[in-house]
Image (cartoon, rainbow, N blue to C red; front, side, top):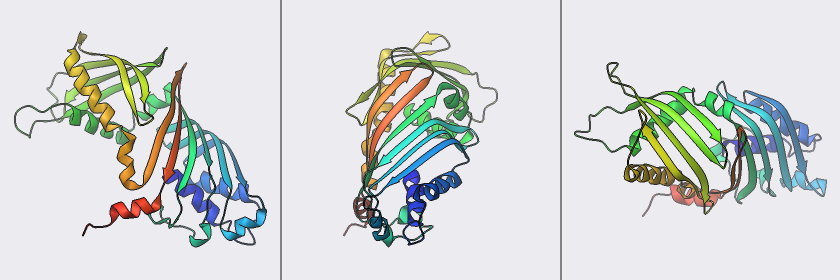
Length: 274
């Protein structure tokens, strides 16, 4: 939702008689909200044009290349097309994403392209590494008491393969124990979109120090991953997301998704129960 908030913030500044150059104003808002962007094209459609003064926008289209969100996080291609937006006049500039105040649902389509190089660069980010460690330690069943240390991820590496397959290599060591022996884990699997809601690993093969682990344990881990990445979890926050495409082509991952944000649903989910 942060990207939608950026776009709305730019549009808010246009709802006035002096808002003459819509595309440039919104492009400026987008540029100021990211670390860097190599190419950016923005188009705001509104017919008739006076409707912008009423706080209504027919369509917003953004096409960008080389979007840098953080020092180690870069998106090769980001394209967004939003359906008609109403009620912008009820907002004020600088409104926080959680207080957008939009009464009607927002929805649109998004296309995302990530390169193998950019993915591996992002995997070096401490923030992403910490999230992956949390995910892994949540999937691995603990033994003994709850004080058992979790695993730390080392030397993460992703390789994109033919036929929508990928290979993921990582070293594992006990957190906080420099004497622990490093385990070399490798996962190779196909990837498939399931009902537009989640990604499922197809025919996964997992090995530790060159030895394949049991299919039963692999199934347990992969089922856990599918559940963790189920987009239906966002619905409690008023967000409906559907993954329309996931293709690995050469050294790139091409994603397409539909996103709908219903602020009314979000407010209801946050209301305390009687």
